[in-house]
Amino acid sequence: MSRMPIILVLLAILAYLGLNSLFVVNEREQAIVTRFGEIQRVESEPGLYFKLPLSLFELDNVQIVEDRLIRLDLNDIRVQVSGGKFYNVDAYLVYKVASPRLFRERTQGSLIIAESRMETSFNSALRRVYGLRDFKAALSEARAEMMREVRDQIRPSASALGLEIVDVRIRRTDLTSEVSQQTFERMKAERQAEAERLRARGKEAARRIQARADREVVETKAAAQRDAEILRGEGEGERNNIFANAFNRDAEFFEFYRSMTAYTNALKNTGTTMVLSPDSDFFRYFQNPSGSSK
Image 1 (cartoon, rainbow, N blue to C red):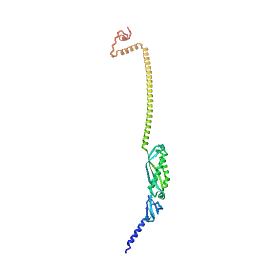
Image 2: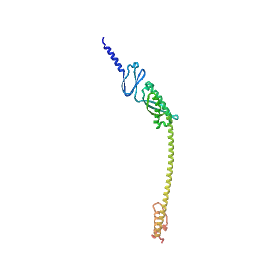
Image 3: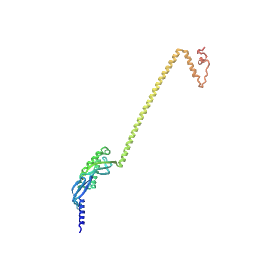
Image 4: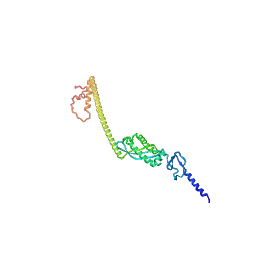
């Protein structure tokens, strides 16, 4: 009888045991080696490793856990701030498995179990931190401090699971619909009141400017009229001085000039009919160039 089949079976068994004794850890993984359910060692560096074969008989089992940053999101968390108003908050945290051994012991190496517990701690921390802030502070520069507080509050519970909280971020902080409407109405009322104050100040300023302009117009007109009267008086005085000097120099010529001026004014083409006696003094220079009555 040929021994070839036996040899082939033995080779297959050896190949199976050899392959079952090897496992590979890449750069994004960590491996936990257990024997009969007890943790034997943790392999955190990438490479090829050996273990006892026959995992089916619980000799050595390998559990792979993540060795990278993992993100956990919380969306639409309704939190109450100091004063009773509410916000809708979106936030996330970044964590990694820092202690694979503790992670295995506390969560059986399950990210689902670990994240379920962290969600509870994360939610509670967000509510506590927001509850210490008033309505405006939650939207101010205090946000960075709030994120640090949340991170510090959940780190102990995460460490107890073999996890390390790397960062916590608040992505969105929005008012709830009812608070948004109340805030809008309040802001609208404030803007309307401010607009009324601005209009009142504008009207008051307009009245002051109008009154000042009216006063300046009256003062300007009065000053102009005063100057005109002064100039008119000075002109009349100068005119009278000229007439007086002319009369003193040649009284006869002055009388002649006055008569000529009177003729011009009286005999203009005005359509007026004048009936005068030829012997009237008005025409004495027509009768005698010297203006004498002889």
